[in-house]
Image (cartoon, rainbow, N blue to C red; front, side, top):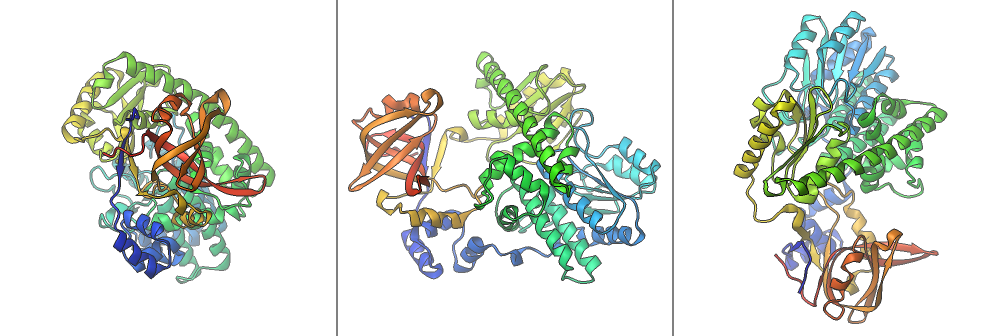
Length: 585
């Protein structure tokens, strides 16, 4: 029996194919099966996946618009024209801004950057700043992570005689604006290796092309090579922060960007790593970026002005870097407090209303901070398995943010709701919008109708647990666990492998541990093999765990634990079922 709320789904294994691939590549059959699960089926593809060399990156001139944009920026370099890099306030946007701003500084261009204020101005290219730039003598504006749907703004820039270069990766709503150049990976075929680049990834491609142009060929000057390695690290932060799929181009950029973080000469990145408690002695993991670095980089933009983040990423001063890293840390703590309060209120609204019976969640409140509602929307979408829109009605107009669930295109749904909105933008997984408060009820009805009509599924994604492989405990050696690191970086499109082990017997007595005794630790045995297991936030399920006389099945991630210099493998429990045989959906 089991009272677990999750449905376990075990991916099919192919023993013969795994053994063949393992022999061809020189890896274990476990790693080979995990590659098969990720669609990697032949020797060449497996080597590319495991090694992901920088040489696998698509040349920048193969990204639509890059050659034209690099030519225009090259002209600005030659003429020492005044340039503004116009960015965005999230991790991806500030990293993209820092990449192009720093390169243009190195090249001696009179350059400045502009990041709009999230609350006062909102997302995207705006007409008023364009007019101010023109009046101040700016000649070229290059957007990063925004602008692809800014048709009126592009027309105004053209009227004012400005050279506008748009670089973006968001969904293209209705054709491209009439700018001097438009750089966008979605202008590639939909199955292209670079189509999933983030804004920082696109900025890296343009920076690479400009570095080639000023170097007079595809081989760039030495000082620009060092800059490009730093830019790979910034692109990796943006890709992870924007939760882009870590495959193809993105996997290469993130793998090498994480390696560069460890040895980064950028003072801001060093200070940020130190403040986040990430050791410089170990390889930085994508999970650490997602849960420790990205929230700090996002915090200033969510609560105030993101300019300080660009300052951090571009400063040459160690003292200034430490000062800014401390400030971002403080902002992140404030953000966490707001997030906890708003999330709790949102859960109460769901419980007290008819929202639980709806195919989507659309919640609004006048006391919610518009800089935090995107995070809250993500938490509710994960918790309830429904596309979620959160609206902060304390701004004028009201500010909304949405997060999706697997298989549902949020941007397309908001496009269908455009008549209810003042503006919107984003992509299939996340989006933002502005709305008049009196249209929220009609948006709720329209959005729920669209979700109900177009998003049919048998299970709630929040209740489905997909497992890669069933393994006997005796194969979980420290060598295998270290070999799993070859599949890093983990993230969207390449999740950390999850395993199933059945017919386990709990030995000894499980213990409640941690603050508030919220966690469980216990030992499980299978034949002659015994492991320690840790189940976070599952102390309230102790009776369930022991309900079959200590027989259980575990869904888990194996990890290396180091205690007093001694290394051992332990099991981080994701879920469990009581009884000797797992019930699979």
